[in-house]
Length: 116
Image (cartoon, rainbow, N blue to C red; front, side, top):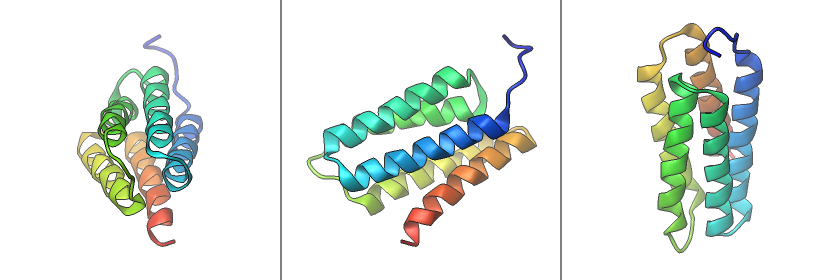
């Protein structure tokens, strides 16, 4: 498994699509449903990638989803700030150019929602 080549384009695309789905869920669904979508994305990330920024992103989403589930109401801007903080920390742990590109793609996805 360690020798298996990772297709970063495919993984990055899935993670960005999952992130946009999660942000859309925060905008459209109730707190419990939105936190569940975030948790599912986190679990998918940790299963797809066993280490590195993709795995760390998944773990952070799982932890954040637990925090969000306890709130009465979600404010999109607050959730975007949380996700932006997670992504900002990933820049410090990205070891390869592919990981840095993945983090940049995630950051761009969040920026698209911040300008809306």
